[in-house]
Length: 444
Image 1: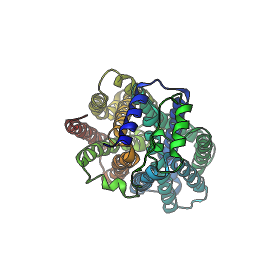
Image 2: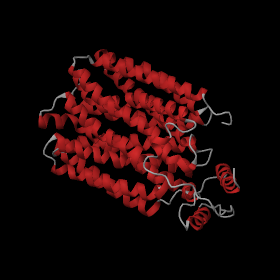
Image 3: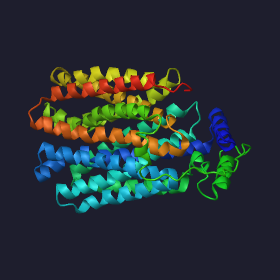
Image 4: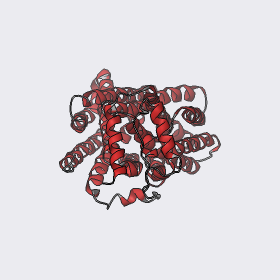
């Protein structure tokens, strides 16, 4: 290990041990905003699904593909766009992806069929995939060791809060106007968030310490001063790391340590396979199980309320127990909740609502745990690429989930059987995480 790298590690260790200042909390708050906006943008299709299907006479298979289009785009953005953040910087990639996502959301005003809507959902997803990975990485890099799990848990709260507020906005707009306006307002909110981030979010210190650009040393020292740690020296990096390419994330699948990338990615895949089924189909399936359309939509919103509480609880619990063990326990409890929720709709509406909130709590808490684990599993030089890669597994799970559900519904599967299937996926996620923990490096 050369002296420059040792210096960087020493600086990171000092920052991990130091208290957090206002600039660091502001950066985390803005990353929270990014996740909230992404929650609105990616789940707006779920909240408008019934209206879109009724307007165009769509079957469940076509609707499933529309629900998956944004997630497919997120996968592409995570794998091929996010690695460029390690080269050009986290901040500019976040801004560019948010402005692009907002534009594609607003363009939904002029769609005239499911094909065009699917293309716009895909393009929106590409931008969201890049922004949400970088928000996660920036949060991990700005937080100190004490608050990192809670800070990343808050990002999941942001996503759930955005989904909750997006659902409330969708309910109001669908009652008073056409479904296209839900997308337009989502795009306007995305642009407003991008402007706030342009003003208030600085570049990551870990990114600047890579020394990829001439003025990075000066910018890093200035950022340290703004953080209240100007007395920490920044040494000149005479051998900057090689510039990443858009294929760098894929290279991690066969690089040294690739097994852990596959295992963490596998846990993400199975977890998000379950999560996106619950978030995408719950409003419609609750309606199909006998509830009114309004109660079905309310059930979807309450799911995200539980999700906010679960992500917060993960951060608090992780300060007392091992982060990954807490996430694993939440996954296992989520298996039982998924198996029970549909039977509960036939004998007790309050019980079904309570179970819906519990499912949101348990699954979002699990997601927050994996989100907090991912950045710690990769070095700074490849962190965006690595997190982007494992989140691509997550997006693949999310992409497959609504499509599989749509085909199974067309094959006359019962709603209860579907929830049992996706409970099994949650169990598989816990198993992958267990094997991942068994393969910790000797120095970990």
